[in-house]
Length: 268
Image: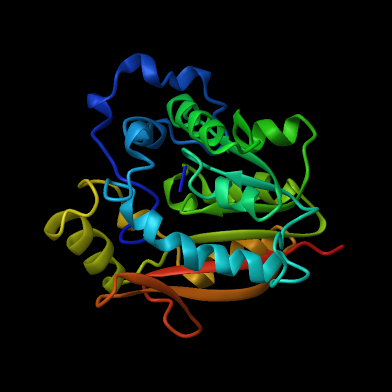
Protein backbone atom coordinates (compact mmCIF):
# COMPACT_ATOMS: atom_id res chain seq x y z
CA UNK A 1 0.00 0.00 0.00
CA UNK A 2 3.28 2.59 0.58
CA UNK A 3 4.45 9.23 0.18
CA UNK A 4 4.93 13.00 -0.58
CA UNK A 5 7.82 13.59 -2.65
CA UNK A 6 8.18 10.72 -0.29
CA UNK A 7 4.81 9.52 0.34
CA UNK A 8 3.26 6.23 -0.37
CA UNK A 9 1.15 7.08 -3.31
CA UNK A 10 -1.32 9.40 -4.77
CA UNK A 11 -4.82 9.86 -3.63
CA UNK A 12 -8.22 10.25 -5.15
CA UNK A 13 -11.54 11.08 -3.64
CA UNK A 14 -12.87 7.68 -2.50
CA UNK A 15 -16.25 8.66 -3.90
CA UNK A 16 -14.73 8.61 -7.38
CA UNK A 17 -13.73 4.96 -7.09
CA UNK A 18 -16.04 2.33 -8.49
CA UNK A 19 -17.90 1.03 -5.41
CA UNK A 20 -17.38 -2.52 -6.63
CA UNK A 21 -13.61 -2.04 -6.55
CA UNK A 22 -13.32 -1.97 -2.77
CA UNK A 23 -15.71 -3.79 -0.47
CA UNK A 24 -14.92 -2.62 3.06
CA UNK A 25 -16.86 -5.54 4.50
CA UNK A 26 -14.46 -7.93 2.80
CA UNK A 27 -11.38 -6.35 4.38
CA UNK A 28 -10.14 -7.78 7.66
CA UNK A 29 -10.85 -4.81 9.93
CA UNK A 30 -7.79 -4.95 12.20
CA UNK A 31 -5.69 -1.87 11.50
CA UNK A 32 -6.95 -1.36 7.93
CA UNK A 33 -8.56 1.93 6.94
CA UNK A 34 -11.00 1.09 4.13
CA UNK A 35 -11.03 4.69 2.93
CA UNK A 36 -7.28 4.60 2.40
CA UNK A 37 -7.59 1.28 0.56
CA UNK A 38 -10.12 2.92 -1.76
CA UNK A 39 -7.72 5.81 -2.49
CA UNK A 40 -4.99 3.51 -3.70
CA UNK A 41 -7.33 1.19 -5.56
CA UNK A 42 -8.19 4.18 -7.73
CA UNK A 43 -4.51 4.59 -8.65
CA UNK A 44 -3.70 0.97 -9.41
CA UNK A 45 -3.36 1.28 -13.19
CA UNK A 46 -0.97 4.22 -12.91
CA UNK A 47 1.30 2.62 -10.31
CA UNK A 48 4.08 1.69 -12.74
CA UNK A 49 4.09 5.01 -14.63
CA UNK A 50 7.37 6.67 -13.54
CA UNK A 51 5.90 10.09 -14.31
CA UNK A 52 2.47 9.37 -12.83
CA UNK A 53 1.15 9.81 -9.27
CA UNK A 54 3.65 7.25 -7.97
CA UNK A 55 6.63 9.14 -9.41
CA UNK A 56 7.95 10.00 -5.91
CA UNK A 57 8.07 6.30 -5.05
CA UNK A 58 9.92 5.48 -8.26
CA UNK A 59 12.54 8.09 -7.40
CA UNK A 60 12.79 7.00 -3.77
CA UNK A 61 13.27 3.32 -4.55
CA UNK A 62 17.08 3.29 -5.03
CA UNK A 63 17.68 4.84 -1.59
CA UNK A 64 15.06 2.64 0.06
CA UNK A 65 16.53 -0.50 -1.49
CA UNK A 66 20.05 0.47 -0.41
CA UNK A 67 18.80 0.77 3.17
CA UNK A 68 17.07 -2.62 2.99
CA UNK A 69 20.07 -4.33 1.42
CA UNK A 70 22.47 -2.92 3.99
CA UNK A 71 20.22 -4.01 6.86
CA UNK A 72 19.46 -7.52 5.63
CA UNK A 73 22.30 -8.76 3.39
CA UNK A 74 25.14 -10.86 4.74
CA UNK A 75 27.20 -9.66 1.76
CA UNK A 76 25.88 -6.41 0.31
CA UNK A 77 28.19 -6.75 -2.73
CA UNK A 78 26.79 -10.14 -3.76
CA UNK A 79 24.93 -10.41 -7.05
CA UNK A 80 21.81 -11.56 -5.17
CA UNK A 81 22.39 -10.13 -1.69
CA UNK A 82 18.99 -11.15 -0.29
CA UNK A 83 19.13 -14.79 -1.41
CA UNK A 84 17.85 -17.20 1.22
CA UNK A 85 15.59 -14.65 2.93
CA UNK A 86 11.80 -14.82 3.03
CA UNK A 87 10.45 -11.28 3.08
CA UNK A 88 6.99 -9.75 3.45
CA UNK A 89 6.28 -6.52 1.60
CA UNK A 90 3.30 -5.36 3.64
CA UNK A 91 1.13 -2.84 1.84
CA UNK A 92 2.87 -3.75 -1.39
CA UNK A 93 0.51 -1.93 -3.74
CA UNK A 94 1.32 -2.85 -7.33
CA UNK A 95 4.75 -4.26 -6.44
CA UNK A 96 7.14 -1.36 -6.85
CA UNK A 97 9.25 -2.63 -3.96
CA UNK A 98 8.47 -6.36 -4.26
CA UNK A 99 9.98 -6.72 -7.72
CA UNK A 100 13.49 -5.42 -6.96
CA UNK A 101 13.50 -7.43 -3.72
CA UNK A 102 12.85 -10.55 -5.79
CA UNK A 103 15.60 -9.58 -8.23
CA UNK A 104 17.95 -9.29 -5.26
CA UNK A 105 17.27 -12.95 -4.53
CA UNK A 106 14.62 -12.84 -1.80
CA UNK A 107 11.55 -15.04 -1.66
CA UNK A 108 8.88 -12.34 -1.57
CA UNK A 109 5.31 -12.33 -0.34
CA UNK A 110 3.51 -9.12 -1.23
CA UNK A 111 0.37 -8.39 0.76
CA UNK A 112 -2.17 -5.65 0.23
CA UNK A 113 -5.85 -5.03 0.95
CA UNK A 114 -6.48 -3.71 -2.59
CA UNK A 115 -7.48 -6.32 -5.15
CA UNK A 116 -7.02 -3.73 -7.90
CA UNK A 117 -3.41 -2.99 -6.99
CA UNK A 118 -2.64 -6.70 -6.68
CA UNK A 119 -4.07 -7.43 -10.12
CA UNK A 120 -1.65 -4.89 -11.57
CA UNK A 121 1.19 -6.31 -9.45
CA UNK A 122 0.60 -9.85 -10.70
CA UNK A 123 0.36 -8.76 -14.32
CA UNK A 124 3.55 -6.71 -14.14
CA UNK A 125 5.53 -9.42 -12.33
CA UNK A 126 4.44 -11.96 -14.93
CA UNK A 127 5.62 -9.68 -17.73
CA UNK A 128 8.99 -9.40 -15.97
CA UNK A 129 9.30 -13.15 -15.42
CA UNK A 130 9.29 -12.77 -11.63
CA UNK A 131 7.72 -15.23 -9.21
CA UNK A 132 6.21 -13.19 -6.38
CA UNK A 133 3.51 -14.51 -4.05
CA UNK A 134 0.94 -11.70 -4.03
CA UNK A 135 -1.93 -12.01 -1.56
CA UNK A 136 -5.00 -9.96 -0.79
CA UNK A 137 -4.47 -10.01 2.95
CA UNK A 138 -3.78 -7.87 6.00
CA UNK A 139 -1.06 -8.37 8.59
CA UNK A 140 -3.70 -9.71 10.95
CA UNK A 141 -4.90 -12.27 8.40
CA UNK A 142 -1.36 -13.46 7.66
CA UNK A 143 -0.71 -13.83 11.37
CA UNK A 144 -3.88 -15.86 11.79
CA UNK A 145 -2.69 -18.11 8.95
CA UNK A 146 0.53 -18.87 10.86
CA UNK A 147 2.91 -17.03 8.53
CA UNK A 148 6.37 -15.84 9.57
CA UNK A 149 9.21 -14.04 7.80
CA UNK A 150 12.89 -13.21 8.14
CA UNK A 151 11.93 -9.57 7.72
CA UNK A 152 8.74 -7.57 7.32
CA UNK A 153 8.84 -4.34 5.32
CA UNK A 154 6.14 -1.68 5.57
CA UNK A 155 7.28 1.37 3.64
CA UNK A 156 5.04 4.42 3.49
CA UNK A 157 2.23 2.41 5.06
CA UNK A 158 1.84 3.26 8.74
CA UNK A 159 0.58 6.79 8.04
CA UNK A 160 -2.36 5.22 6.18
CA UNK A 161 -3.55 2.67 8.76
CA UNK A 162 -6.40 3.14 11.23
CA UNK A 163 -4.45 2.04 14.31
CA UNK A 164 -0.63 2.27 14.18
CA UNK A 165 -0.14 0.34 17.44
CA UNK A 166 -2.35 -2.54 16.28
CA UNK A 167 -0.65 -2.54 12.90
CA UNK A 168 2.81 -2.78 14.46
CA UNK A 169 1.66 -5.50 16.83
CA UNK A 170 0.51 -7.67 13.93
CA UNK A 171 3.45 -6.82 11.67
CA UNK A 172 5.93 -7.43 14.48
CA UNK A 173 4.39 -10.79 15.33
CA UNK A 174 5.04 -11.89 11.75
CA UNK A 175 8.80 -11.41 12.19
CA UNK A 176 10.74 -14.50 13.18
CA UNK A 177 12.99 -14.30 16.27
CA UNK A 178 16.23 -12.70 15.16
CA UNK A 179 14.50 -11.05 12.22
CA UNK A 180 13.85 -7.40 11.42
CA UNK A 181 10.97 -5.00 10.89
CA UNK A 182 11.76 -2.18 8.44
CA UNK A 183 9.53 0.87 8.17
CA UNK A 184 9.48 4.22 6.45
CA UNK A 185 7.09 7.10 6.96
CA UNK A 186 6.82 10.90 7.26
CA UNK A 187 7.71 12.92 10.33
CA UNK A 188 5.10 15.14 11.97
CA UNK A 189 6.92 18.44 11.69
CA UNK A 190 6.13 21.86 10.28
CA UNK A 191 8.72 21.20 7.58
CA UNK A 192 6.98 17.96 6.62
CA UNK A 193 3.65 19.77 6.40
CA UNK A 194 5.14 22.41 4.12
CA UNK A 195 7.00 19.95 1.89
CA UNK A 196 4.80 16.85 1.85
CA UNK A 197 1.41 18.50 1.81
CA UNK A 198 1.59 22.19 0.87
CA UNK A 199 4.46 21.76 -1.60
CA UNK A 200 3.90 18.29 -3.04
CA UNK A 201 0.10 18.25 -3.05
CA UNK A 202 -1.13 21.84 -3.18
CA UNK A 203 1.55 23.76 -5.10
CA UNK A 204 3.60 21.37 -7.26
CA UNK A 205 0.80 18.81 -7.56
CA UNK A 206 3.27 15.95 -7.50
CA UNK A 207 0.57 14.03 -5.65
CA UNK A 208 -3.21 14.34 -5.69
CA UNK A 209 -4.51 16.63 -2.98
CA UNK A 210 -5.60 14.68 0.08
CA UNK A 211 -2.94 11.97 -0.18
CA UNK A 212 -1.81 12.63 3.37
CA UNK A 213 -3.21 13.72 6.69
CA UNK A 214 -0.49 15.48 8.72
CA UNK A 215 -2.19 14.43 11.94
CA UNK A 216 -1.48 10.78 11.14
CA UNK A 217 2.27 11.25 10.84
CA UNK A 218 4.45 9.80 13.60
CA UNK A 219 7.64 11.34 14.91
CA UNK A 220 10.69 9.06 15.11
CA UNK A 221 10.40 9.09 18.91
CA UNK A 222 6.76 8.00 18.76
CA UNK A 223 7.45 5.22 16.25
CA UNK A 224 10.42 3.94 18.24
CA UNK A 225 8.31 3.92 21.40
CA UNK A 226 5.67 1.80 19.68
CA UNK A 227 8.33 -0.60 18.40
CA UNK A 228 9.89 -1.01 21.82
CA UNK A 229 6.46 -1.76 23.27
CA UNK A 230 6.35 -4.70 20.87
CA UNK A 231 9.70 -5.96 22.16
CA UNK A 232 11.81 -4.74 19.25
CA UNK A 233 15.24 -3.14 19.54
CA UNK A 234 15.65 -0.12 17.28
CA UNK A 235 18.84 -0.74 15.31
CA UNK A 236 19.05 2.16 12.88
CA UNK A 237 17.26 5.31 11.78
CA UNK A 238 17.96 7.18 8.56
CA UNK A 239 16.46 10.21 6.92
CA UNK A 240 15.39 10.31 3.28
CA UNK A 241 16.29 13.63 1.70
CA UNK A 242 15.43 14.96 -1.73
CA UNK A 243 18.16 16.75 -3.68
CA UNK A 244 16.28 19.49 -5.58
CA UNK A 245 18.97 19.70 -8.25
CA UNK A 246 18.86 16.15 -9.57
CA UNK A 247 15.57 15.11 -7.88
CA UNK A 248 17.32 12.07 -6.39
CA UNK A 249 16.67 10.80 -2.89
CA UNK A 250 19.57 10.11 -0.56
CA UNK A 251 19.95 8.57 2.88
CA UNK A 252 20.91 10.94 5.68
CA UNK A 253 22.20 10.30 9.20
CA UNK A 254 21.00 13.69 10.44
CA UNK A 255 18.03 15.01 8.51
CA UNK A 256 14.89 13.21 9.70
CA UNK A 257 12.70 16.28 9.34
CA UNK A 258 10.46 14.94 6.57
CA UNK A 259 10.94 11.32 5.51
CA UNK A 260 12.74 8.67 7.49
CA UNK A 261 13.35 4.91 7.75
CA UNK A 262 13.63 2.77 10.86
CA UNK A 263 15.06 -0.74 11.22
CA UNK A 264 14.14 -2.68 14.36
CA UNK A 265 15.37 -6.12 15.38
CA UNK A 266 13.40 -8.85 17.13
CA UNK A 267 15.47 -10.58 19.79
CA UNK A 268 16.40 -14.11 18.75
